Image (cartoon, rainbow, N blue to C red; front, side):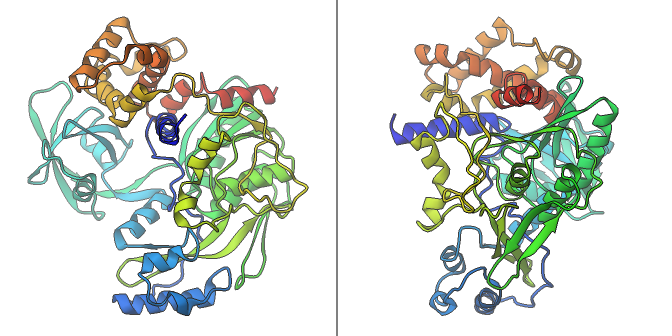
Amino acid sequence: MKKNTRTNILIALTYSVTLIGGMFFGYKFLKDQGFQLSKPVQLVNNHTEKVDEILHIINKKYVDDVNADSLQHLPIDSLLHKLDPHSVYLPPTKANEMSENLEGNFEGIGIEYYILNDTLLVTNVVKDGPAFMAGIRRGDKILKIDTVTVSGKSLPREQMIGRIRGKKGTAVKLTILHAKDAQQVVFLVNRNRVKVSSIDAAYLLNPETAYIRISKFGADTDKDFIEVIRTLKSKGMKKMILDLRDNGGGYLSAATGLANQILQENKLIVYTEGKHEPRTDYVSSGGGEFEQGKLAVLINENSASASEILAGAVQDWGRGVIIGRRSFGKGLVQEQFPFGDGSALNLTIARYYTPKGRSIQKSYKNGYNAYKNEIDDRFNDGELTADKTLKDSLKNKTIVQGGIRPDIYVRIDTSGYNKFYNKLITKKVLFDFVYDVLGHRYDVEELDQNVATFTISDNDYRDLLKYIQSKNIVIDQRQLVACKPLIYNDIKLLLYKYHLGDAGYYRALNLSDNMVKQAVASLQ
């Protein structure tokens, strides 16, 4: 298979599996870096002063020896790329977005939306958030934001976000069209701080085995984790499947906080060390909520940073079984240095090491672009699809390839993936069909009660084929037959996501998820 074709299939795979397109390549390459607490704001505002201050910080704090003078005349992004792939300069909007993402809250009205036919379609409303309290519901269409018409305007997504979000206490006027109503309604919604949990799903797969999905390690993830464990234990949980796939990392304190709940007292979780940073050990305090039960941790090529710290500690201490594929290999510690204009520098100051001294970081000696495309290389080399078991060797203190290797390897199943299916995914045809047509045909109760047996009807499928043709896509009958099971499954998952949120999506997905099945079997 040609490299471009393989890459396209990999894109389709990742697009499909992570909320069927929730994250492109999943690993959030320059976000969620596991950085430490920030320093006080530096009073630097113009570009020249900023470059000088960055070079000064590099000399004082960077993880390795570096000749900062050789970087002096380079643009900021270029000089940071010369250091490593994770030292990064963040403009004000990006710095704020990253902070909100990890803090687990933002200032806004609490909605998610999808751009359908140049219209903002509300796909989720945070319960008890400002929009929810105002009466906005899933399926509503946003026609105007304040006095600006957004329907049919093809505005960039960033502009739409900027118009809806704003500071706590300010108001935004939204002109809404309800799903089954021809009359427009105007809402005046007061923005507020909206709390968003980083735990996507937590429920019992069977009477004793719980499934917990964590999307990132935010400021409150460890606290949310404790609450979830207590609730599940009250329902009979004795075993846990902790899903860290596509978790790009986050706060180190959140990862160690979770480790405290599953490791016994006085166990080394991770240690960090750099040229200007003496070794720092992070040790479990004991008294956690789940120190004894059987544990399986799911990882994949998009699990990075804090996810790898937790998985590495579990593996080194034999606390549980690691299932999946080799993790991303991001073992560099960033510290954030803010500037007076709201921008920030995330600079690598140390490296992470597992309890047995294994470096998590993969090589970046071939440069920034090679590092960024390394997941592609794994696919092309067969590492992600090989029908074999990859064992982690604990004999070597440093794994040359980087990342955490699973105890039980589960390959990506590429059955049915082809160019036609890839086109449906990349053009978002299945999304559009569910949100535009199919979502109105099913209700929450019907989906919730029939998760194990639900499938779309023959009439739904015929309408899908008409919808595909309406998008000027030529249907390849041979490829359609091959990918039909994938299409049926994807549409089901999108319906569950739309009507029942992340919790419903993962309940439906896990019925056929090979890693989850392997985890259940391993915990018997």
